[in-house]
Image (cartoon, rainbow, N blue to C red):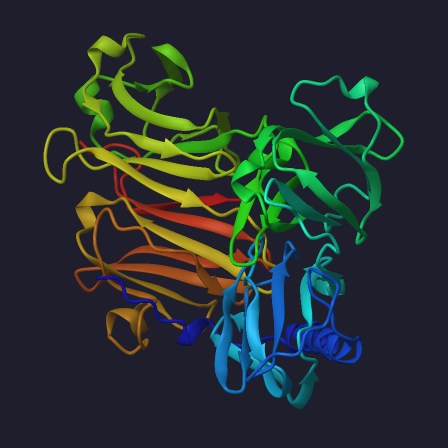
Length: 497
């Protein structure tokens, strides 16, 4: 069981309070604008409801460095933990007067930033609020539905440009494989603009975005089948990609929002990303030297591919702050002595799925010659920088340590003696077992002392570690090499974004 304590890493700087006040004021202002802006629905008409008149509101989070938020309506959570590139779906609210509270989800808990009572929502109004721009200048973009009523074999498209990565683009919607050089843009769109593309046949199409006035493609969907959405009104929102693996393919991705769901469409050339850490203390001894890693996947072809050569204890491939691109798919990994032959494999993993647009850390951990047994600790990474926090994930890969407690305290506030005497308060993690991996923990940016306690003694002491706002870090607890050599002590492998 993992317990997460945040009482020692709380405290919201005044600048962050001020920023959230601005953000939520803008969001509430957008609701008030809807209240004053008249009624509309996807058909463009206003129809009175029978018993309980309603209004519909949808929120899409497109501010790439902003934290998630909760929105409460009349005391109940209407939108919970809405994170980047996510949609709330349309919420059916009782028309008329409502009370709204917006909470920023920040280190230390939810902060009610502002309350507004008696806001008026017009009957039958149906509006999408999209949060755009970085958190420092975030603002709401109000977008109506497409005015078209799609037939049973059509989709109605409202297209929104919400990515500052491409200020203005030309949009091409063609048959798959058509030469873009011979095609004419369906329309052009500026950042924060939106275009009602009308009702289109719900067939197989290829969607491309090129820098305005050029044929330089910054997004290519390849073949997309709109058939499953026939008869629906869709909102297609271009947002920024937020990790290096996806950014290397294209700076933008598309969010396709229905009334209740959302689908991400990455550029067709987007891969998965992976990095591998050697944290098995006795693998080198058991193999008689370095090891190598092979990957088998239909995405790579019929033959296993050597992806890491001459891998030694505490190596990270490709680096502590990057991932190597791999085609998305299902993978099996083999670890072998450094003989260039997968036939010498001493460990074969189970099947691991690497999804397009996602990044992963794989830690080779455990012992080859004794317990706990050698294996791969696998977790998804989230490289998105959030301006209001530092993000920290912890991996226990030190088999000699057993169950441990982990303390993360502001630098200089708690000593090693305090911790060993039991006077330091509650740990960040308690009873943290070998092989366990936490979710990301949001902490206030600053300098921290990280201590790992095994058997009542501080085994790892990292002092004055800077966790900056927007940083995303993975701390991997590791042990000494076995048999004794270098390193001879416990420590941490620190990965960053």
